[in-house]
Each structure stands twice: as C-alpha cells, then as structure tokens.
Amino acid sequence: MKLKEGKGFTLVELLIVVAIIGILALIAVPLFYEAVQRGKQKSTMHNMRTIATGLESYMVDYNFYPHNIIAVEPTYVSMTPRRDGWSNDWVYETFQSDQSYSLSSGGRDGGGHATVEGVTSDFDDSITIVNGRFFSYPAGYQHK
Image (cartoon, one colour):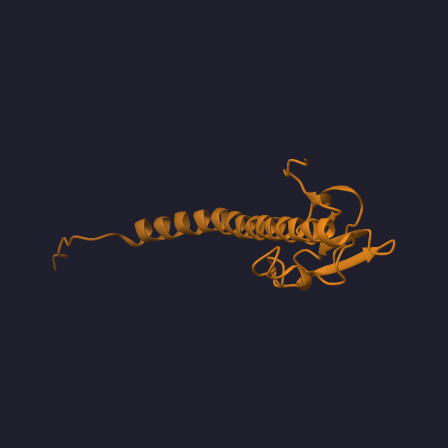
C-alpha cells in the first residue's frame, strides 16, 4: 500500500512553531504588564500635577490650602481626578494651619510602602507630592 504524499505540515514542524510562539509569549507578557504599570504611574503623576496646580492656585487666592481636593473644582480644575491610576483613593493632608499639604498615591497595592524622599523602585511604593513638588517618585522621573 502506497501512502499519499499530501501537502501540509508535519507534527514536528507544528510543535516547533508552538514552542516558538510559547517562548515569545513568555518574553512579551511580562514586558506588556510592566508597560501597563508604567502607564498607570505616569497617569497618576499627571493627575497629581493637575491637582497640585489647582491647590497652588487656591492658595494664592485664599492664602491657605483647602481641606479637601474637591474644593478646587470648578474654578481651578474643571474636574478633579477622584482616584489614582490603580483606582485607589488619594491621601490628602494639610499641615501647619493649612499652610502646606501633601498628596499621595499608595501605588499599585494602595498601601504606599515607601514614604522616603527620592526615587521609588517598586510599583507598590507611594508617589507623593508636597507643596507642588514631588517628594517620592518613580525611577526615571526627571525631578524638577
């Protein structure tokens, strides 16, 4: 009995293609996940900068910072972002008879592990802005 010579791929060729696709997925998925987290970090920092600008404008007009960030609406910020990039609530505090403030995001897990000044290295670390300047911020951010 003679076998038909058919057109198509052998099982070995298909297994090699599946293995290559698997290897590419193992490389690409973690990189994609990190890119998503970086995007959330950048979004959070942008929103913090927007809120801080509104708070500073409020301070110029009233000579004190408001007791909550919603007070800057709609005069200084058309709509204050309610949550950070990871959908966690902001942590906003005023100090010294409302003459200074801090605004923080708890990071990916909302816990805010690092509160030291300078560069943070983990997505779980907090991002904090104090009186219009970033106090703790992600690596790669150009501190101004």
